[in-house]
Length: 386
Image 1 (cartoon, rainbow, N blue to C red):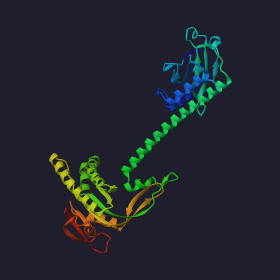
Image 2: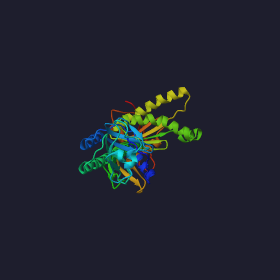
Image 3: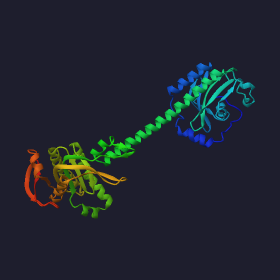
Image 4: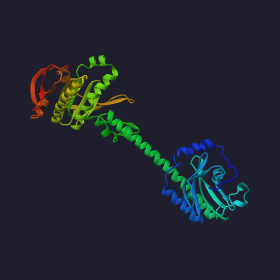
C-alpha cells in the first residue's frame, strides 16, 4: 500500500475503531462479492490495482484486491489514512507532484504515481476504510469514473452492513434455538409444540384446551428422610440418578412430562395401554438400577405410581408476568391420590383404566379405597405385567 510522510488521525478515532470492531470483518476470509467490486473498480478506471481496505489502529487491512498481493500494510503513512479523513474521497493525479507524499515512494520502477479513493462510510458516519484504485503512472480520472467509484464504495459498505446483519441474525437465531431447546427441557411438550403458533405482541399466550389422557404420578418413597440425611446437593444428585432414566423411558414410550414437583413426577399419555406399559417398564428398570446401586453400596430408592384416565383442561394458571401451563381436573386429582394411596414399589390404577387396557395388565390385587375429597369409594388395582 502506498505511504505518505505523516498519518492523520480522525478526531473520533476511538469511536471509529469501535465501529470497525463491531462489524467483525478484520482478518476474514476472501468473499466473492467484494472481489467482484474491486474487479469492477479496476475495469471502470482502467487501473492495474484496486483495493477494498479497512483502516485498523496500526495497519491497513485489505479485504479484497486486484493486482496487489500483500494482505495488509502499516497504517503509518498510508494513503487510505488520508482518505478516511475526507467526506467524498481523495484523488492524487501525480503523487510525485504532491508535497504530502514526498517520501521516496515514486522512486521504484513500479511505485505509485496515481491514487483515487473514496471512504467506506457507516450509517452512523464512521469511515471504516476505502475503495481505491492505484496506477504506476500519473493520470486523470473522469467525473463519470469517479462517480462510479463512489457507487461501488457504497455497494462495498452495503455488503459490509449486510454481512454484519447476517452475522447478527445468525447469532440471534442460535440464541433463539438455544432458548427453544431450553424451553423444551423445562416445559411440557404440549406447551412448546403449540407455542410458535400463539405468540402475539411479543407475549406467549397458549390458549386453554380440553384433553383426554391417562395421567401417571410417580413419587419417591421416604424422600424427606433422604434429604435430611444426605443434604441438598447429594439429594439432587440422587434424584437425578433416578429421574434421568425414568424420563428417558417416558419419552421413549410416547409420554409427556408435565412437571416435576420436588421428588414427584407428573406425566401423561394419549394411550392408556402405553401409559400402563410405561409404568411397568419404569418399575422393571428401577429394580435393575437398585440392584446395581446396592452392589456398589449406593443409596437405593423406591417409588409409588398411580394412574387414571379421563377428561382434564390444560390451562394457564398465574398472572401476566408469571404463569404455569398445567393440567387441571378431577381425573388428574384421582391419579394423584391413587399414587398417594399406593404401597411402596406398587403401581395402582383405577378400575376404569384397568378395564380399558385389557389384556395389557394383570391385577395383583383389587382394592377399594376412600380417596381424599371424594365422597364415594374408588375401585383400583395393583397391577403386574400380563
